[in-house]
Length: 265
Ligand code: PAF
Image (cartoon, rainbow, N blue to C red; front, top):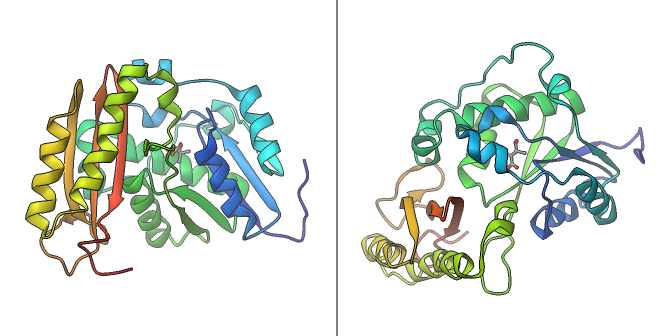
């Protein structure tokens, strides 16, 4: 452990299987403090599918080494009992928690918010870093912090992609070569949507490209107003394309800010 008592803590919550995307969260944490806690906890409450939970990669020893080498001051891999010593008080993600991811992963965001709140309670961070890749998660965590007056500053981190554009994810290690080819189609579809000249044409491009990806079982592909999570209707909004689905039993999720459509950021 290498924590400096006088400095604030930045928490990087993870479920392990760490990769360059997590490393980028640690890098961002360094801009705020020297005390960086990386938590590794595969939270059963956020898995509505027991197979997905069972097959989630478990690589704590390698993850601890990777996190330390990336600059974590402390790697914390708590047990289930440490996180949930009693029956957990579930935090509801409300209506937005039942949209998109929530339609396909019922109760998922209640599980996420419940564990994130526990992680905050147990580590008292001043900052917590979350990736934009899980955009709905990031949105709901920000809302929870606002609503419950949690004294943690939520820092969002851009999605890290490989050289061909595939968003890095712990689940990618399960993709075969041909699955990977299909997965690249998601990025291409998002790029194509961003070349649209109106909300309608961007949506049409997104759906056309997504539906042509081989072996891709789509859960949703939509353009949303990223400030409200409502369906995007016009170009005065900050618009983000969001996509999720399955390739050979592996769930993939991605999103992209429609920089050519929305008000400029
Ligand atoms: O994004 C994740 O890895 C998880 O949902 C999180 C935030 C660590 C909560 O378990």
